[in-house]
Amino acid sequence: MVNLKKSYGAIPLLEREWWKSDIMEVYKEFQKSGGDPNSSDAYTINGQPGDLQPCSDAFKLMVDHGKTYLLRLINAALQEILFFAIRNHNLTVVGIDGAYTKPHTFDVIAISPGQTINVLLEANQALDHYYMAAKVYTSVDREEFETINTTAIIQYNGTYTPSSSTSLPYLPSYNDTNALVNFTKNLRSLADNNHPISVPLNITKRMLFTLSMNRVPCENDSCTGPDRGRLAASVNNISFVFPETNILEAYYNNISGVYGDNFPSYPPTIFNFTGDDIPEAYKIPWNTTEVKVLEYNSEVELVFQGTNLVGGGDHPMHLHGYSFYVVGRGPGNFDNETDPSCFNLVDPPLQNTIAVPKNSWVAIRFKADNPGVWFMHCHLERHLSWGMDMAFIVKDGEGSDQKMLPPPSDMPPC
Image (cartoon, rainbow, N blue to C red):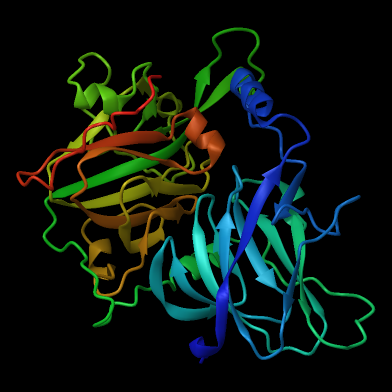
């Protein structure tokens, strides 16, 4: 057991991507080409690429033997889920996305973009220095990610003779989906008397959202994407279009013509979502601005269903304005008759970001008790930019404290 009484203040470990060029130029280029963005030139931990990269340094964390440290891991990378580990040290997860979890010890952490994970590190090894390292996880065949992407160092205070060479920690293969699932499926809420949870049990709104990669014809000769097509992404076959007037302003001020309120609760066409032979016609999404309207206090169950369209992929889905309980997951197509019997309704983790592995499904539940307009999107920047996003409008309740707040008096104009 970890001795929490001997733990020390939170130490942030910020993992990021770094490009030699202006990131907005990278964004404009891949939007213009219709293909994937250029890979980053380096990954960093607390601003340093690590000493495996040329002409760079490694962030160094000094520790005292016998003490326990709380590390706050933050994935601020734009494009990738990351594996993280520390040589000769286990990591005990105690929180995710700002919510406590039952302590569970791992040798490898999987963290999605935009996600925060709190772990306890026991400094219980021989006085020396040890590598920590991060590596990209992706189910897409991109072998350049087989290598370690960034490193930092844990160094013990005290007098000792440093080892002549420091070995790297073990990290799974870049496409090891089992390692990702093994991490996420073992997370649990505390769910005790001091930390009660409230999993929605009387579901009033059920939805299934397909998460798909798409390909659309190029509008002009500048497109250099695969098969002379432009990559796109969608939720329930809708590739979200950002309106010129923001949806929150339009909803609050009752401005018509900005968005539609007919976002489908289920995919418009039911097919073998994870099959290998998907009709070509399903690759082209609708480009539109639709929202899903929820009644105040609705108890919502939403199943994210990955598809194998255009090769599929992994999708860390993030919901603004809410945390949700991750009650179930599994490979293949979600079965509404059998899969709910395996849901964890006792101590599911409370998160605001959940990775949906390629050709898999994840079920979440939340209570719609926060009125307003709330964006939901894949946290891989390229997928978000291609249209894998949508918005919920949660209506006001009847009470005075159940209504959307007005804009602040000093809110600047767009």
